[in-house]
Image (tube, rainbow, N blue to C red; front, top):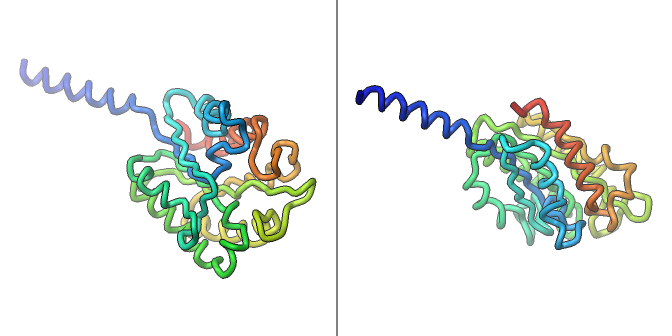
Amino acid sequence: MKKLLVVLLAVFTTLVVSAKPKEILCIGDSITEGYGIPTDKRKEFRFSSVLAKLVGDKYKVINLGYCARTMLTNVKLPWGDCGFAKLKETKPYIAIIMLGTNDSKMENWKGNAKQFEKDTGDLIDLIRKQNKKAKIYLCYPPPAFSGKKLSGGDGISGLRIKKEILPILKRVAENKKVTIIDVFNEMKNRPELFDDGVHPNIKGADYLAKFLLKEIKPALK
């Protein structure tokens, strides 16, 4: 009888563990936070919330998006100041990283290309410390528009994202053996999805969530 109880307890424990939703992390800045969506609708309509509905109850989508944050760790507002502690509380099954938009500001970017490459690789390593089997996706950030053209100048720069940041992300992805999700080129001809030129609106967040789902679908079980 005692042995039977032990076996039943082991089976019950296995079922409980297996029923626990697998974690999908959305790591990013104000785009991930949902800044382009009205405050009262943000939590419902930002892309991570839409993605959560699309993947269903088997997965728990965790939003780790923080306004104005950068991949760079040596500037004023690094993502890690907000995100590292939260990351250490997770065991990601999938991690979707989308940073680089705020890094493109000249005040952040000047002289920091090598640092950006290092910090991107370090973030991937930190995620793997939480779960060495995590499937990691490194996103090219969305385009940044000014009117109907990619924005330039000393603020958020669509041109700098395209010409300098994307090649570095590609190189890191190859070196770290993670998968690129090309959000930039997917949305570069859709300026109507960005009311302010940078942050997806409700339609943009819905579009982005469905694109991300298509890209991560092979990892969903």
